[in-house]
Length: 111
Image (cartoon, rainbow, N blue to C red):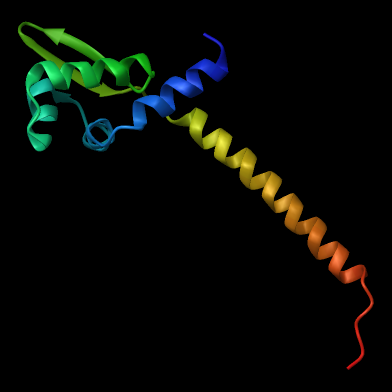
């Protein structure tokens, strides 16, 4: 999958509040579908739809043991966001550095 498509899927997956709460919960450790559905009062079918979006976005992984499906965070799931934000911060810092240099080069006005 192209990096741009993965980025779009990741942001789409995080666009919903219920899914973000699931990610917050999974960042503390693995959980069953029931444990993830409970805080928002979701039915299991709705929770599974949300979890499928998170899985398609590359954020979570699932494993079924017996009748219990457990989800956990994909270890490097959010790296793409961190890298993108870091790139924007670096560009912004360069802009401020150029502004500071331009201001230093300007003669001071006399009062």
